[in-house]
Image 1 (cartoon, helix red, strand yellow):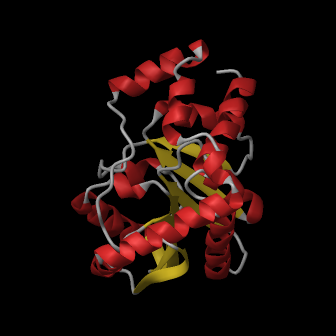
Image 2 (tube, one colour):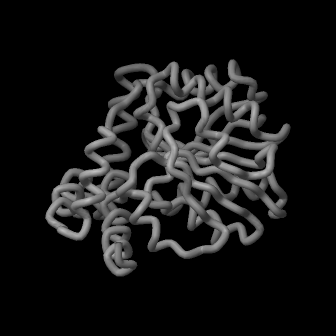
Length: 248
C-alpha cells in the first residue's frame, strides 16, 4: 500500500471515530497521564491491545518519548493502514487476542510497564476478556497499569440511557455528529481498488467488529481483581465514555 493511501484513510479513520467519541483526544491524554504517572515518565514498555491502525500507539509514543509501544491486532487492513505511522518506537504485531499465544508474539522485555486499549475490547466475550486480563496480570510488573478507554454500562437501564444521552448531547454540541460514520467509512473504503487485496484478506479471516459483551464498569473491575490486579476503577468519565484503570 502506498503511504499516501494509508495516510488518507487513517485521517478519515480518526475523523469517523470522533463521530461517536467527541472527546477522543482528551481521553487519549488522560490515558497518557495514567501511564506517565505509573512510569514516572521514564523508560516504559507498553502494549496496545486491539490497536487497529495505531492511532493510540503513535500518540502515546509521541506523548511519552521514553516509551516503546507494541500494538496487537488481527485485522490485516487496519494494520496496513498503520504503515502511515513512522515513529520508530512503535511497531505492530499481527495476533488474535483470543489466542492464548498472542502475548508471546509481542517480544517486549518482561515484565511490561503498561497495557492500553481504546474502543476495542468490548467485542471480546466475557470469558475471553477474563483470560486476557489474567494474561495481563501475569505479564505486567507490580505497580504496572492497564488503561482502557471505551463505552461502558453503569449497570441499570435508567442510568445507562441517561449516560448515553449525555454523550450524544456532547456529540451534538461539538458538532462531530456531522462526521463520517463507522459504516460510511467502511463503505467508502470498499471502493478503493488499491485496498481490494487487504479487504479480501480481512474477509478470509472473518474479521468483524461492533459487537458488545455487555460488561458494566463493575463487571470490568471485578474481572480485573479476580485476574490478579490490586485495584481497578474509572479515572475519567463523560456520559458512558470512560477511561478505566487497573493497577497490578
